[in-house]
Image 1 (cartoon, rainbow, N blue to C red):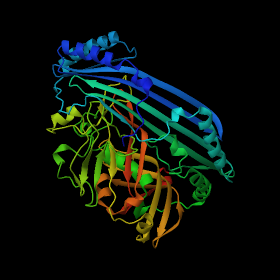
Image 2 (image 1 turned 45 degrees about the vertical axis):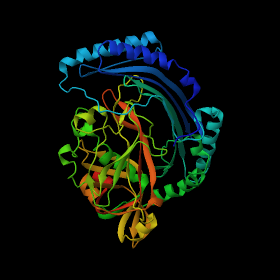
Image 3 (image 1 turned 90 degrees about the vertical axis):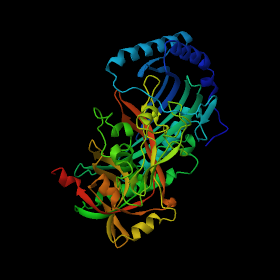
Image 4 (image 1 turned 120 degrees about the vertical axis):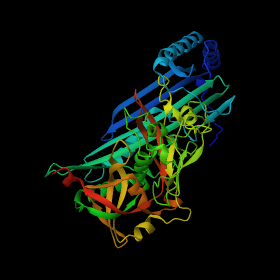
Length: 504
């Protein structure tokens, strides 16, 4: 995890020490029990192509500083973009003013769980090639080459391609003495092929399964993900999908590939076990959770085969960090153990209020202008140590469906009733794949679905999926997060025909 690469000197050369001394000294002088400062620089670049021709190229940078305080048990926050000591003092004063105004309506005194001090710490994520050090022309040329490969295939009418890459640099300091500097890189390439039936006007699309990851430009060049092979297979898979029969609604055994299951984990476990949500703090925006604190240690979340961890240390994870935005070190912990709910994702304030001795490091702000909120860790379903391969799982199913890739989803405000579709669905007959199906969605409640899990694949089936854009909070923030999982078998799952459900 720790590498010889260091945080960019251009970021370290910013007046970090002067900003720290100015802001934190002023906050202490004004009577704050706690104060912290963040300096962030976030560089985001997106290359988009349509039909192998450049469509847009965006390049943006967000640079600023933020001061957060606890004054007489109430939060205060202020942010700016001028990196001077005078501005840091002004922001500390403004944050205290905000806390004083907010105190009148604060009924929940802020108390932060303790955390060891990290006095001079540095961390860099695990990547090989900084995408921002690769010439723009070289990046565009590779995307054009891969897009042209897809465009050249029979039946492919249009190709939409994109690659988004982000370098996030963050400095954190607080009145306890912690000082951390970190840098992480992430990337998300994606290629979508579209075909059109000229006779009917109907169209169908299919995209690559490669997930976004905490890697650099090597993700597109080192062969660990075989882009040429996947792109060469995509047109035939798309043609097969257009000719596939519509599914007959009913109950089936469902083999779920990790390229689909990661999203079900995100929606039905990841969000449901954010403790601020379970306590009602997200009710105005994104709902609550059925997994309430009174059920901790007793709720049968799923079958005894179900073991889910929260993890801020997974190699190449999108939510992997050295320290979170409250100076808490990255760590791993159990959320579901042998099918039972045993843990939550928390920040320092929520941890103390629920009697936990320590936060598990889930505070994150997506910008220097935003206050840190409790965000999702890499929440992952663990494989069975000696579990079967995907082919072996399919071989044990007499009548079922195999789902690959994510597409649309819907889930209620308590993260309990849900419906998911996918990129591809295959009929399983007598332990063999028997062609693709169309118009498929699977539907369940969270506990029924995970309770029906009867086989968990081995480590050879494990894939780290994820997304760049998990939304939360008011004002809204987005966060990158990964979810690892193996292939798994779920018995007697309700399958809907989406065309029939839409009344068409």
